[in-house]
Length: 303
Image: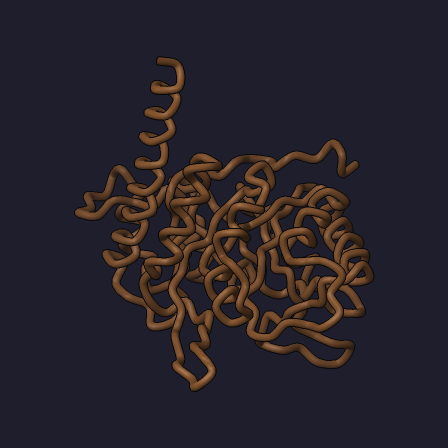
């Protein structure tokens, strides 16, 4: 039963990267002790499992080789948990089979929907934060966890418009979802910056309100910025380096929460692996500094 489920493994509390085909060779070199590499390897890698639903071929050969040396996280983009008809059962079955094949350390999905009864959309669309939507999400997440026989994480979205008539704010929605379904939170810090800028709420208050005990993974990414007469609009395109505000919010969270598995996402205008390794190095440096500050505070507190 769900109450007895645990995360089957844990991602290491290190900086990881989103694995793209362009980076298969340098990542394998970096994580394999038998292959010399001039760049550090990621602490773990994350993939969109939908890209590996095929039975075989080069993607599986590369992923299998990398998985021998590096923990995996599956970040699903296709279940459409918020759709009125519920998740796609065929999609869930393929995800379950892939989990059986690779045994990832973590599986995650989005607080969103991307399909109707007759259409699928290439977007992660927002849901209203109402009691009805919460009941629906609890049912969907619970069913997914029962089939996968594991707890999953659910990611906070990037939003461009807010629904009228919400019954609660986003953090309360996520906390209640975790409480009632047993899932955890994938905290996307870039999405907090994007949504707070677009919708006008306080990103620091959001970060401070999140329960660290529920956060099993963190995402860090860049975004595009459009200037408009009524203010800037941020677009969550994962196509640039992490912004200074997202780094600041990440630092604030890990100072309070401690180390977490922290992922560098980069999905468009994909750079050389060296750029990703550099961004992962920044995340590691921030977590080390948070540990140093925490140790110093503890020492002075006992002095």
